[in-house]
Image 1 (spheres, rainbow, N blue to C red):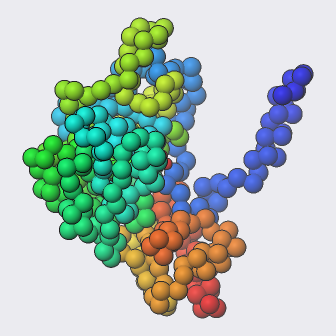
Image 2: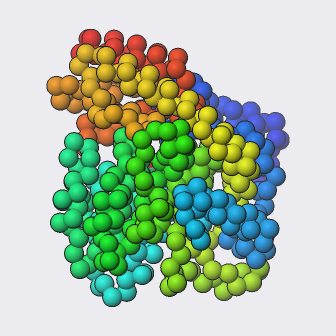
Image 3: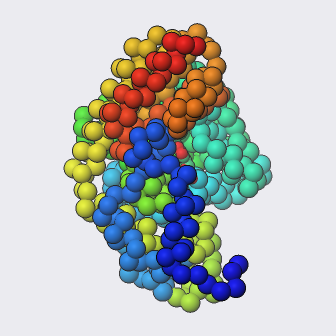
Length: 386
Ligand code: PLP
């Protein structure tokens, strides 16, 4: 640390220099990120509330009430009633909370297990490492959940099961209703990871896309992860954990808070609230119609990309896009890494899933048609020469 402070101007200059190698979403090259620029009005709101701490809600009852209102709004977006929860640091924290709750609700199980599809996010394996929970992985067949294998993994140690509504690799929605049927009456916790899909699927449904029922309309469902900082255009960090509150939900007791005794559901202690207030404002400002417009545009670009990709010789779409995620692989099974390496040399920032031999593009709001067209040109050139 410096002994004497330096001027603001000098710091700003140094920062510009240090950050110049960071990529910008509007460069047109970031096609693999699930985050984007936050919505403009949310940014204006955010800077006004940086002192708030939701870890001590008794000190900030107004802001705690805003979080509650936000959770209520999201609960109704997902067709639930009496939904509680927490805005989290992201989808990983929300998934970890779900695992913890699933385990705590079954103290009778000594060696608890949770079943996830092979498309599940790494956060579930982080949870396995952090908590005494074994993750059982159900295989996929042609990128879709193998329901028979899933069923075969259910046993007396199963405290929870997970379905994905918008997988990280392909945006696939698991057969949520069918999973619900498998666990009906078995006292098994059911969590849906809609970290990405949570701010896509409700609007696709309103736009008359064919969206299977995946939310609290399914009575066996206990909780949902849905992240504002992905397609919600909220400010990083903002995830969401929503739960149909069971009577015996165990909270963390934090006895020493200045604002008085409060209980936490989140894993974080001190946690930001400026992002929560900003997202509350974003939802109010955009409304359902604002989100519909954003999703409609992303889907138009998604369909354009999917069509262009399937026209390239040697390239094959991994699956028909269900949302604004497009995965492609090679027709002859050649390693996708070779293509990814060439694309990276040309600056393209994509998502690569080695286990499925696919490259995936996230058609976020910052991705424009001309970026996709430039990308297709480069991909065509690369595949011609390989
Ligand atoms: N779940 C899914 C389906 C995801 O795609 C991701 C991240 O991409 C996560 C969870 C983890 O979210 P975060 O990076 O916000 O912790």
